[in-house]
Amino acid sequence: MAHVPRATFTLTAIAAMIVGGLGLGTGPAAANSHIAAIHPAACAWDGVAHHPGTTVVAGGREYHCGADNLGAPYWFAGASTDRHDTVANPGARTDPTGRFSAGARQPGTSYNDYCSGYQLIPGTDDIYQVVRAADGRLFWKAAGPVAGWHFGAGTARPEATWRTGSLCYEGNMA
Image (cartoon, rainbow, N blue to C red; front, top):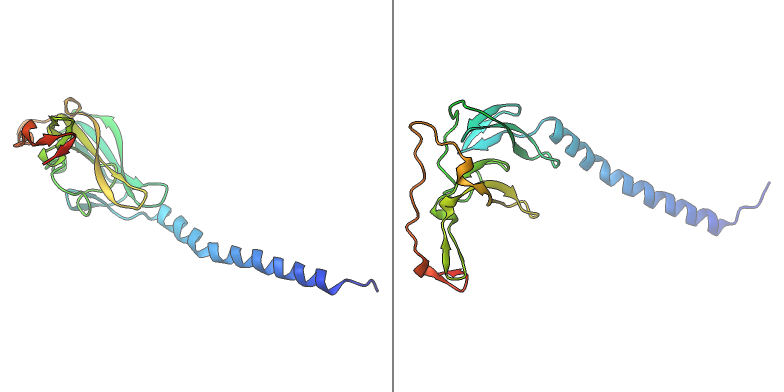
């Protein structure tokens, strides 16, 4: 019988247990991620839940409820359409958390106003999309000019901003 040094066998066994242990730790997380991708949560649009696979119309575009690569609810922009809005569009007037899922778009409001130097940039000049930060927080980000949003008959445009450039000082809003 061949002689196997005890130290070599022990180090090999420890290495195998470490590698095997690391593999066990990732199994449930990978399984949960896979389950979330198959069964994503409902998408929110103005506080109303929509089941995965649902298509809504807003501002002249279709949006499809699905999941992003992390399994979180996400509205995917689809084709342009002449159909009437099927969801409420109050504008990007407040923090989107709990009201809109990532991917949703809304016309800007005074909530989105900002300063560039001493000049006020009205939030109403743009369309805003909900995006997810690296920490998971949702926020509005400019996605294009408001000319790209179709305001149908009977759809109110957001009110003009109440702010003026006098509130801007070196890029900061007073």
